[in-house]
Amino acid sequence: MIEAVLAVALILYLALQIEDKYSIPSPLSLIALSFLLHLLLPEVTEFTPDARHFAALVLTLLPILLISDSLELSVDQLKAHGLSLFYLAVVTVGLSVIAALLLKDFLFGEYHLSVPATVLLFAMVLATDPVSVVSIFSRFELPHRLKILAEGESLFNDATALIVFVYIGLYALEGGNVTLGYVAKISLVVILGSILLGLAFGFLGLALLKTTDNRIAEMMVVIVTGYAAFTLAEHFYNLLNLLGAHSHLHFSGILSCIVATVTLNHWMCKAVSYEEQRIEAEENALRRESIEIATSRRLIDTALNVIKVTVEERARHLRTREDIQLLGLVANTILFVAMAEIVNLALLAKYWREILAMFLATTLIRALMMAKFAFLTQQTDKMVDVNFRWWGVLTFAGIKGGLSIVMLSMIPQDFPFLDMFKAVVIGVILLSTFLYSMVLLVLIRATADSFRAELAMEEEPQIQPASASLDEPT
Image (cartoon, rainbow, N blue to C red; front, side):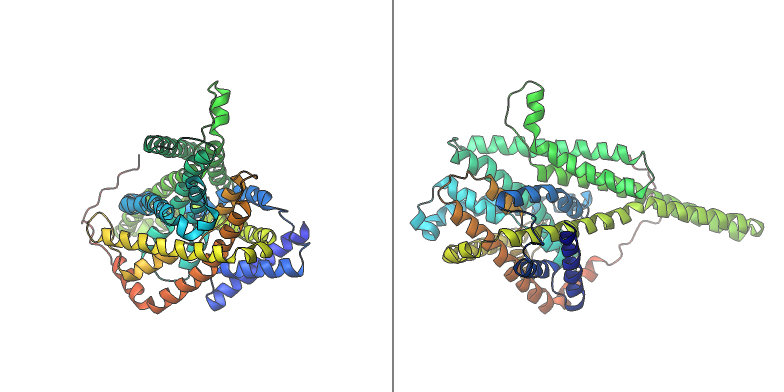
């Protein structure tokens, strides 16, 4: 175990060094270094013996990755881009599944896949990886609105893909009758239930935050809030059974975790913003007084120092975010190291045609979906206009991740096409991580000046009213 800790730390160090010196996204280096270590010293990285154990590891680490990424989202951003994110994360997934059903015989005709099996397969490869997207975007100066669209879609897309996988694909595979009414009802119940549960835990976490001034304790509250929301959502049926309602209903842990973290972060930021405005007003008043009354300058300087200390204490959650981001990096490194263990090269070689067909098909489908989205944004003022460059970035931001393997572990072991599904899903994850990342790097670098100009326009200072009210947050 000590050797495994050393290996994870060394791989993360090397990946970050490569990213800093050569601008190669850390996920690429993490995968390459993890495979290299597994080939040279397989006994050092024995985290998971099989895909099922890997899925358990992903479920253990997934909340911290979601928390880290959710801290980058704000309620104001979600309000401003809610319609766009809903289309990208919900409508696009639904349309992609429909397109998959139309193409299933062309792509996998020899397997004669049923409709439920097709839904399962494509739901797994539609789930994207926010960690890789954030890692790549952090290396460049990109418009904030583009980052919000790509990173927000990556987060919420996972929840939608998992709902489609569990409540449509698996439900139908087990003999359930899938109708439009059923899809509408279960989607509404799961989404609203997950959101309400996330809000409840977000406010519970906020109440806990008010009990401590310790930065480490604050970080623990943020982590516990996200993990608790995720866990209760996934095991909601246990709570129902305890209350006497015999049900198998569970909500989306991903969505509940995101909502809980965003809620908690929103009120933390709002409190800090209010305090900064209030202290700035007090500081200005004290400075004016110091000019008028020279004898009180020492006393006023002392008061200003106290105010600055207060600002630092109020802003401690910014350091908490950095600490959680570090935990997210470590968790992501562990996942990549573990993934190297479960990759069966013989299986990938056996199904290389199916892997390539799926990769090309999903890439084309995503490109068409993003093109349709770009067209819609030009027709309404309620969405941010998406130009050709943004379309390219959004298309290749669809990098796949560990959640797809979690879905793999949920498929019954007696499913006849399980080996093929394993090969296709893992193959698409590897191809999208390497090829999409490289295309994103080339595309962003080639148009870097245009992106910087768009970012500068976004950051132009807005003219504020002469007298702005300072209302305390409620």
